[in-house]
Length: 124
Image 1: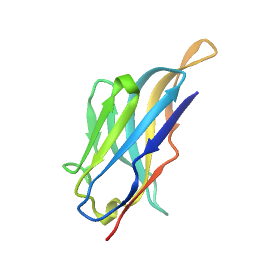
Image 2: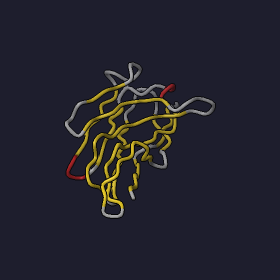
Image 3: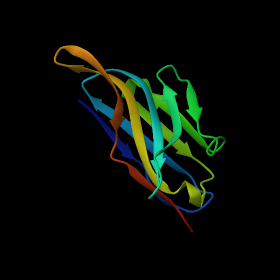
Image 4: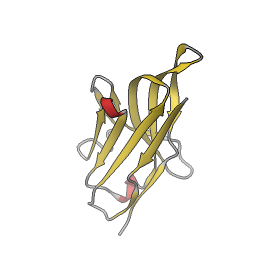
């Protein structure tokens, strides 16, 4: 009922910047919050940053001051501006949404809507 599509990953040198985008579509009633998580092989998926529909943000200590999350409610889209990238930022980045959606004439809610992931590689 809800699809998330990420874009913007790629290869960047240390100290460089990338901007990730994630657009939500489907039978959306309301997006309550969106966020970015990342995962490297052999490790658990970890929180990067989140933003509520009201604009309240939260970010992991490891990215504070370097990454900025923002959203466009009209477009059901969330962005992650990543600056001063480090090799340890290399990971698959996943978009997540806490979303209320229409199903069978009722409004349902899921915190478990995920995108397919986009690879970010920071390397010289």
